[in-house]
Image 1 (cartoon, helix red, strand yellow):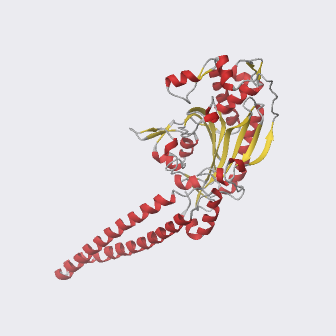
Image 2 (tube, one colour):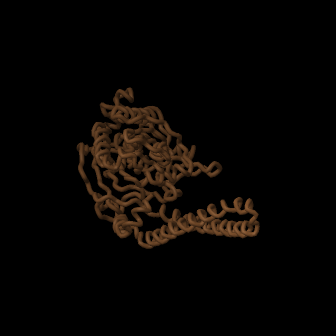
Image 3 (cartoon, one colour):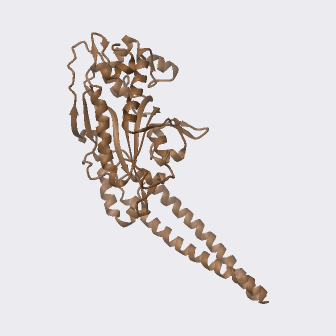
Length: 422
């Protein structure tokens, strides 16, 4: 959430920067500043009214003691009138502030200056690539056929049990899932990230805190009876651990990692993008989250990118890192780098991670603050990244490492899988 201070002091900057995300903010920003002006004026009037009310109410007892009953009754009437005036001002203020709050959450985060111009994913910038794309023979199979032939992932059984997008992992397929999760968590904890195991259902306050609500209701599964949401990513519960928390100047950096299943409705997805493991409604993911002082957050972002790159490189998968353009940037992000691996049998790149800096946008919604060296209260910066999302990693591992109908497991995973070949 953008701060009222920024919107008030430099509205043209906000409008200009949000245009990079192809968001026309002028009408909303103008109305927010009108309401903010009303808010401050109403508060000043209410404070003055309450102060006068308290001041003259204190005179009533003295007037009664002095036998000035008529004067005391006149003061009582004035106090009563001031109470009515205060009540009317409070109601007016609540109505004004309700509209103000409903509008300010409609504004996305401001992209940082490193974000390139562009309308969609075609305009994203390739930062670098790594590992070589394997050359597969003409008999190479896509991962869904390999999984069926080897009986390690059953997509039809998932449809029977739940529906499309909920696969069942079997035998060495299930073991590979568990191996990847443990491998990712071990790499993260060795890098100083504290492992946490959060709930996989969140309340509305948590969804609001990280920006999923009110922006992404349609993409989340909602347990309506209890008004809980299934997590779309571990970022949500993990970051919300620090909702309404005031950190000390020496509490940084905060580094956490978590594994959760993730749930996304993926409404509107169809075609080749949803085949096999390419796009699921339930999938496993390991996440890293950092909370930093503003002056350190971009160094932390670089460190997170290097960390994720090291994991992908160790798996031997061909990859590229993209800096997302304004039109492809998420609602809450100030800057995002996507990691993609090459699916050799499909001949396409598959996203497996997003690493983002949200600057103070989430922290403002979360009321996540810290006291600096001078004791002044400041908003922290939040960052997160997939480290990693499993489905497309598995898809690329199966396709890129197929040989004569078998899958050769990358050497670094063998201590976790307990086998070399599927």
